[in-house]
Length: 461
Image 1: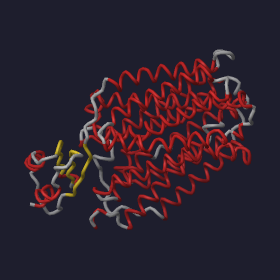
Image 2 (image 1 turned 90 degrees about the vertical axis):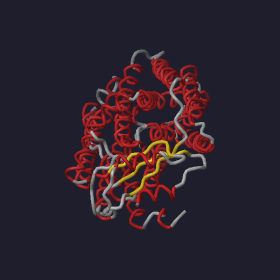
Image 3 (image 1 turned 60 degrees about the vertical axis):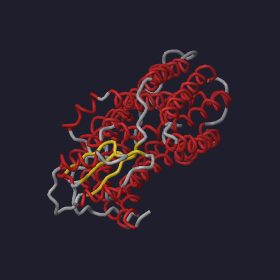
Image 4 (image 1 turned 30 degrees about the vertical axis):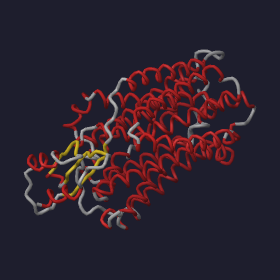
């Protein structure tokens, strides 16, 4: 690694502090997953599982509505200002949820939580504070933080529930979000220049191109299905686990801890194999098959303790792989100049899946005391079958990686000519020159043959 490829102290500080903001906010969201439905059922009005599902998924709807507007507004009004506003909204929503005395107030609190949709604004701030060659590393740090936070939440939630209850967890969520505000104020550097970044922001003029791309639409459906199934199953799994095992919900961490660890350990070689051997599609499709198997096993063995444990082990293995692979495939398939827009649409679709899954899971689990659980997993299985058909028939993602280079500020660039020269180089699959952003974006072959020195020569000429 060259000296210029290393993250500077400012970049490292920015990446770590912004990753911690994601982590603090997502910890608050994830902590309620394994205990929420049991708590909500005990509230006035909570006997209606449809309302439980609505409360569970409500934040996904408001997050989907406000996520892209928050990111685009941060281009005009400043990153930190919008992040502060979003976190304050999130604190208010968490406070309302903590004080909720009935299911309806809880729905309102969860809706307000989702309206503080800062993800796009944080991503844009990461782009402002990192050089092009280090941006992928910064985004990877955020992704790893979210993954670790999710795993920790499943284990910590039952323990915290025993100590402070769900209202206490919502109050803790508000405190964590307030700490995130202080992190933005005192730890996150102020960007010298704040501008739109094609690789990290959503451009309205690119939405039509992204929404017409059938390969991207398949991936959008995939993240929708993955998170719809997650929310639907966590409506019923806590009840089923409690009934089948006889364990109090505060002891459920004893089940989640080993299956989550197994999923993480087995995820790593699968992802390495897919990336290094250019077998991402095969790993991707196989993971959907495993996820379908998990849902079918849930449907058939939801009343048996070891059936639930086996189903959860398969589920977390598949979920971890899919959650890690999907953004990678998006980056490989999306046109270089539309990458940020493609990711923005992808994240919005994920939020819609959270909402639909919560509502569908609540409604289906309320249909019958005898068969409600099975109905939920049949719904999840149908989603997985549709996704499997879509994924199996999609084009294999190209074996490429993204490269970004800064254009010399004093240079007058003929974007069309430079783009054509770069595209003609061995190993370059796509080139985009963006003079307004001072940026060159390339997709290059992962096999030997790409000459980076020649790219730098052409850019500096």
